[in-house]
Each structure stands twice: as C-alpha cells, then as structure tokens.
Length: 313
Image (cartoon, rainbow, N blue to C red; front, side, top):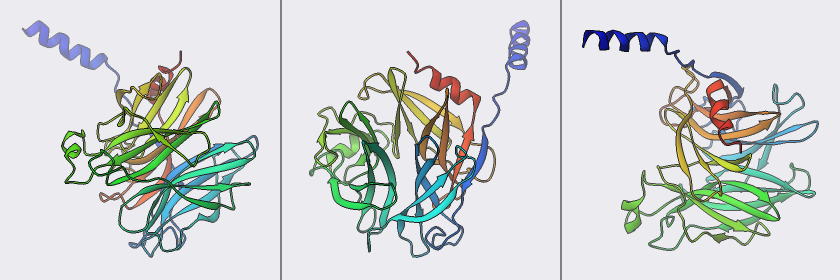
C-alpha cells in the first residue's frame, strides 16, 4: 500500500496543472444605454461577423433605465481594438432587445434576436439591413410553443447559420411551471432547432429539444465536418459536439474561469469567431453574482483550441 501511495504522489507531481485562460476585456458598459441601473455597466451577447478589412460586432447592453438594446462596434485590426458606434436596434418600450445573431446572405444582413415586451417572456424576432447599421424590424418570427410544450414559456438567445440556402437556428426554451414537460427537462431549460428558407417562416424540428443539460444562450459554429455548440455556465464556457446539429455529445468545460474578478461568477452568452487556423472565444464576463454586471471579454486558452480541434474530420 505504501508503494502504491508513493506512485500516486509521483503521478500527481508529473501531471502538469492546466493554466487558467487569459482574459482580455474588449468592451465595458460606459454609455447611458450600457451602464445598467446599478451604474457599473452591463455588456454581453457578442456576435461578430468577419469581413476582409473589418470586424463587425453587435452586442447587447442594459441601460440605466433597465431596458436592453443591441449596440454596434467595428474593428479594423482583427478585434484588437473596437470603436463603438452606438445603438443599432431598439424596440421602443420593449424590456428586452438583446442576444443578436447576425448572418450575411448575399448583400443583406439578417439579425435574429431576443425580444420581450415585458419581463422575461421572450420570443425571437428578425431585423434586416443592407449595411449592418440601419435595421428594419420584421417582427417576431419564432414565438413560444403551445401549452404543454417544452418551450411554452419562452424561446430566445438564437444562434443562426446559413448553409446551402437554409437558415439553421438553435435556440433555448423553457416551459411554464404548470406544464408537465418542466419536470422532464434536465436543468429546467433546453435547446431547440428550427429551419427556414427565408428567415421568416420557421419549422421546429420534431425531435426538439435536441440538447438539455440546462443549456442556454447557445452559440453554434461549424468546425470541419461537424458542429460545436457553446453554452454559458457559472464555472466557465461549456460545449457539446455533433455531426448533424441534432444529436449532441456533451463535452463539459471548454474553458474555465480566468481567476480574475472580471469573470468571477461565470461566462454568459459565449461566441466563437474563426481567425485563420484557430478560433477565438468572446463571452460576457460576469463580475456580479446576479449576472447583470458583465463586460465583453476575449479568452485565450490552449486547452480550448485542442478540444475544438477534435471536431476536425
């Protein structure tokens, strides 16, 4: 037994400790529409579209009035620095306008986002733009499910990809407390999948929900011959893998907290961005336990790159 104990100690000593990821704050809440009621700032839900000479960033922020709006920023140095260009989309008296997922199809931008007229009764809406700055709202395109369904209370936080002429959307949903599926959803909320040929009329998949684990605020990207799904967590950014976007294998933590005060309480609304042969991860870094004091941050982690590479064919 003594020899076994000594061997175990030697194994621990030989096993390298995984370094915490490096965190770089990209955007803080500084303007009236970003400061949140507590005045410390609340920016999150980044979505980046990479163009040849410009990176475009849409993100959500909570104003001092308590309402969320979608903001816009640009970078000409591959995301090293950003210039804020103000509010991109606001829906009047709506309590929540946030969580943008933007795709460019032809010469038009399509933005899918969460909207709640009051409280957190979320639905998914669409806006279109010729330039990514001036948006025309098309209204709600995916409403909560019918009574008794797994997503009868809300649907929101969409992640959209356009492939082979089809819009593919992953979103989170939750049932009302009185609906019986509530007891069957692992973690209380789950991820659904829907498709559309025009971005307006959507068909939910019959197998919904396609992923549970309490996952929400998902971001889906194609890597090689498959897909990777990121979702928010108190201990860091979590992920799952799939070959078809429907059957998912949970991968656990993609990257942990940085050990700084910026993300002490977790990562919200993660977003992957391709950059050459690697991927870059942007999150809402939660500095408050209530998850209402976030900054948009980028995390660098060699372990993350290795895990994403497992998705390559």
